[in-house]
Length: 451
Image (cartoon, rainbow, N blue to C red; front, side, top):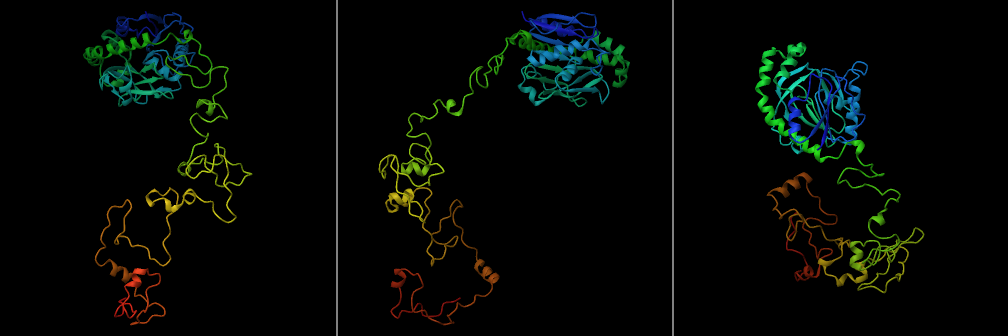
């Protein structure tokens, strides 16, 4: 049977119904009443889980004022370090926040007393304990201090409008509850009669507070009894306490299912070649060379740099190399003569013959021939123009050319040409078809061209 260590800082807050729920779930409770002088264990050896309850002490009290809380903080620090399944309630949740790196202070909005509601946060839906809870479960509040700062890396699970940090989780198995789920009706009346400051801050009298707390007792049992059962399952599934866990080797982790990150003890860290499963200096199996080929080199059938995947060093002038094997190869390992000074090395398309390749299969990286100097560029939207990734061509708007002409102003006549001048030859750069369409007299047009 799993063993749960129950730490009771004060006799005014015993386990009551929470202890009954955990016992019915199959846990063995080892209860230690600190205020009565019962000693606490030095560590969590042989302990499967930890439960820390509340009390009238303040989490801000120094050690000389509340010496009984020193051992409680020590056990909570061990539980956080070993990730032992832990449930800390009210004062226990405040002490847990302190030892884990958070902070507590006197409540900025005064004491919170009586029955109220808390709201689950989004992170609670994926939590094994808080996931099945309703969206706004009933709880009992009775605290004067607050958790103003959660520990680093803690997950907030529940809040309310008055105090935000109502429930949180540290690590994977350590939980803190600012509210109470364990008091029964006689215990609530005892708290109300002994805490005049808290009752006065609530604005209610003792009977009203007790009546409202009694009205939510069935709902508390319906919601939080299964919660205690899920925590008991977490205690049974988890390993033993931090001191009884097997010592993990260097770089390893004792958590079940956790894989080591890093080399095994006494072994060198694996380099990139060792991680890829091959030895340094040898090419990968099934590849002609160690280095990968680029797209142009794959079409031409040659590797990058020298054959065998080794690039030319800085003392060698790089130049085109012969392919290992291919349609234009001259034998693997033989170098092609270097280009003459002032000329670019021939690319794969030049070596294979540009005319032998159709335009659709032209190798990538080979530029298309430039526009002749005398040919004007095609206008956007003209006949025969194909838009690339812009959709079909749109017709020009009516009046767009006139508006453009008005902005540019009147065109000046070309130099050496007067109005009414007839050209007696084709345009510069005209092709054979334009020359064939010339009239017999050799003049272009019968009247001056409009400007």
